[in-house]
Length: 180
Image 1 (cartoon, one colour):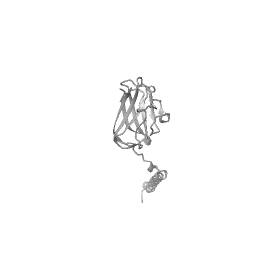
Image 2 (cartoon, helix red, strand yellow):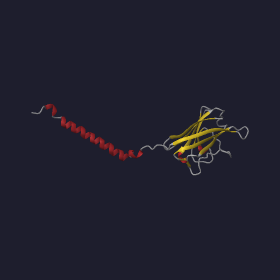
Image 3 (cartoon, rainbow, N blue to C red):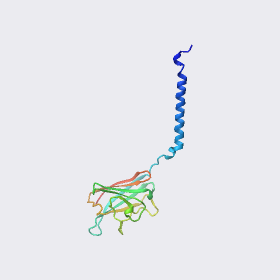
Image 4 (cartoon, rainbow, N blue to C red):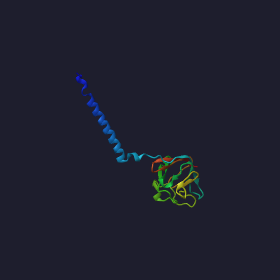
């Protein structure tokens, strides 16, 4: 005669295995049906090396605007239409802004988000010059001007400039620059 305590063990284990198989099948079907497998996050482009400078522009007497130059030295090519440039000058003048809607050759109100710290017109560098072909490649420089009326920078003040790849929200270039 079989002991009474072991008679129900096989059906209980069978039920547990059946539930486990159903859960695994449901998870597999939901991944394909809802497309989770297709939404894997792609990394942003990689800029291996960059440089930046913040130089005073004083050719017109009282004007003390600052010119920002960011140079992409090495790494992936960057599609300019997928970039924004964030300027954080909170330590220097309490302001911050982003250059958006790129590419552009003339910075206007449609091209910034945040404080109005950029110079829109200047025959010698008020434009955001990234590249005529819309690709920012190694060796090319982006230049823009921070106007003194928007953010007065004294010698030694620092700003942080970040180039953000908008599809991935990855910071591809970050430079802390000191005013001259």
